[in-house]
Length: 549
Image (cartoon, rainbow, N blue to C red; front, side, top):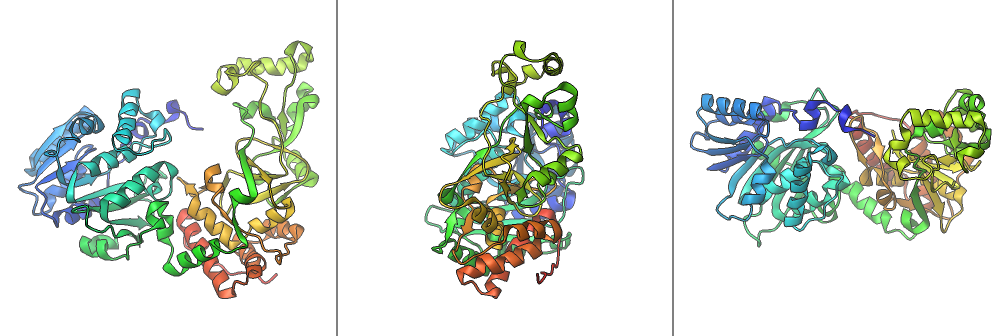
């Protein structure tokens, strides 16, 4: 978990400025509608003013900018004066101003440009949190405290845009897939005639792992105008900046329906793969995860380093009575089976293979155990929220194990793990219980190209490209379960530990998807769909070859 006190001042204010060449491309695109009024809701030191000043056609345009940092706002004023722009810069919170003026039909802009702040909701001061939430409420949109500042910034900006106006912004790549941006995606899908996302292979901001895209949105001219939907433009390098922006905007075929209503990741797939995925999702032997299993978070300790310990700590403090086997990291579970052999290997490496479940009052415990608990108090663990709401603080609740576990994050593709020794898992993993299928069959069938592709479509990823799934996303995964599919779980476990993921999925595709009657060509189509999304997440390109085992 990240804490506010550990973050840099730059990150807390979202101060990552747009490269000038990207800002110039955006300025050229909005110039096409000859805007009389342009809004820049988070202008920083005026990067976009430099772009507007360098492009002919903005000499008579009135620019309104907002920047919370007074020093940066003054730099923006100076830059706009030097460029001869008619700019009015407000050193105040844009959301506060937007709330005051959204209802006024005379306060509308022809275009919005910028790069909204990338700041987590919990890092915002309380007044800004309240304004962010108010934007959602005023627009009758579902709100979550998992949101980021850029989401209400874009919502407010679009609401201030006149019919037919254009919005062009550099935004986090997570707009495509994070759950907290669903309100925004749905709103844009309803309000805009056409949406285009320019999706780069590389990272544009060198000082951060945060991927970014360019969002181009044209608002519908009236209620009768049809919404075309969303188009994706994958780019590599900066060559696209030499093209006419209108050519780029009109380049992709727009996709509507469930692609715009949900996560936009579907738009990254070609039409053949999307159609095949939808066809398979409706197959009688393909099920949604929620229909055959239940998912619950792992044990929440509130202080994992204290409650998850290696054998040496157990021995030093005489904690054998309270120590129970556990796993919680990918290196603990390199395959799909967690048994005594794997547990012993982890222990020999000095991994924290023991979960400490303290039951009873401290007075009845040995001196060495009391010393260990006292060490936790010395570290002020008892003051942490999850610990201080418990009595006594060291009694961890909701302790139970399930026959199947699943790690919260995955590098290539998620796996279910058959928990043969009843080991416990913390909140780095999920506890899975089947309702209509034997555990071994579920674990074996879960590894296949279709479910892996489903995980890419439903999950999310951040800096570093690790795939993460929350319970509501896991419940939507599609699982093929044909009675004709015979998976050797021991062989699958060995293959996962030995071969590349692509090869394992290809082999499992033959077994699991082949049992559905799917041709080798269609199996490869699904597999390549997964690979393309996996590579995009990793920001790599690969040409992988299957093995014939």
